[in-house]
Image (tube, rainbow, N blue to C red; front, top):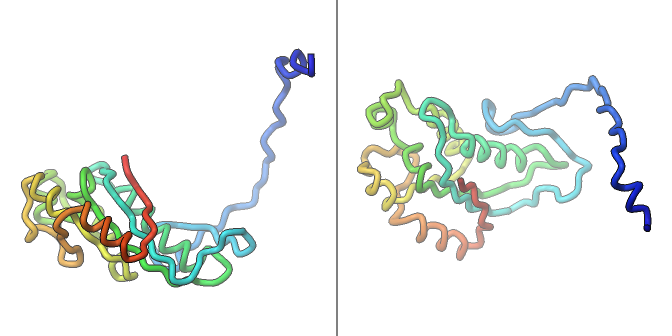
Length: 180
């Protein structure tokens, strides 16, 4: 029987440990977004000179920050302060698909979504100031009826997401998808 009948019985699950210690989140580089926890003793510490190419296609609610963009802020904060020592990182993000319109300036975004403003711009601007290269697919942009003049000045319109992703990987960037 090898213990099978015993394994099939219902067994009580221990109650969750009621630990009142509060998790302390930090924002070492991107102050308002991407909270992280410092884990200086954890394995797989951030390595200096890492290069990350983020493929972002995920859209979000028109009146809220796209969660995938906030995740980018978390990536920066992980490398800046979640490990034992800060580690330099190069990050490039390529927006296409449903994420394309996240880089529209406030006027174009408000007109398209009938919204007051683009809720993604504050975080994207902080990411840009932290050194993140921001590319938007020109094919997706055109396919959605938008012009490059409607894109914020700190984002570059690329020929396509395909060419951007291939070029960045050829330049040694590790591919990290943030897809649907």
